[in-house]
Image (cartoon, rainbow, N blue to C red; front, side):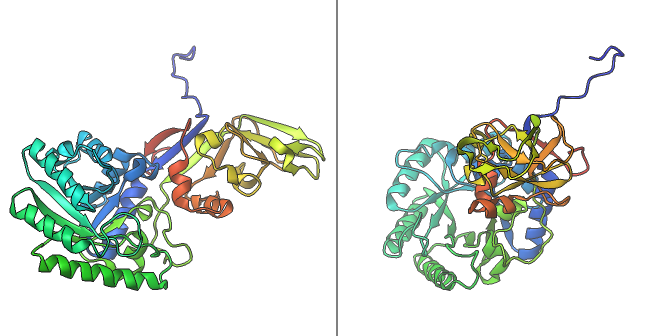
Length: 386
């Protein structure tokens, strides 16, 4: 409290992630209008780093009829937070307890007859039928039943449906190369999915939703939309297929920023950070950013990424350390406490998550889901102070 009785302003965050919930709502609404079918917003991995329950609420407000998560725990966290809409989860290991998910009316996924058996145990414990979805591996060679195992899986699922264990609510698969729209795997996977649907129909299954398209396919491949699309990255305003995606007006929802911890002058010939992988070729000033690989800042960003300080993009100099990294201010005026934007929407010229991804040789998915650690996270709506 100040002597005048006025409250002191809140301290500037050392490092924080600011998430614009209005951007998520806008992105989901934009995608929902584009695809003209039902929409699942994927909020796994803590809402792609944006906050599981907050991202879910914004996505629902934007028109998402479904939410998608990987694990049973994530699905149950949504229920505990009060979400009552359709939620699908799809990744479990042998021995997991399905009973709580069944009791909470979560759609669970089976890849195999062994998983059907475990879901049936959960049904008995919960005392109610499950909502069950089946996944076919159409060429990603990851989760899902193989084409050889698919007829047996759908037959067992149909038998369980007739026995009252569950209602088969969905059949789905996942693209491997949808971010490369001309890749021949896309046509092959869609054909395989249609074949799998025919097999399921012949077995007597009538799912509520059939879904194949992720963000890139939802935007670029209308034939793959079926009854439902699953949009993860695009819901957060990031480009799922750089170089191919039309400008839809999506808005990146995450800004990662910090306060300069120190500014100092260094002379020509001074080495910066571990290993002296960058040596100043002139007298300059450098700024110390209090975040590092312990907070999810990729170590690969050393000497290749940029941050926004004092109205300009500033190159990262030297290696990223566990708690900090250095930017070159090139003699410009800046002071300890000034804002550093690692990445954001890009509206003011600051780097974006995609810029960091390209600099580090990775994808924007990794940039936004890894950032965290000692960063605080704050949610706001556009129009509020950022």
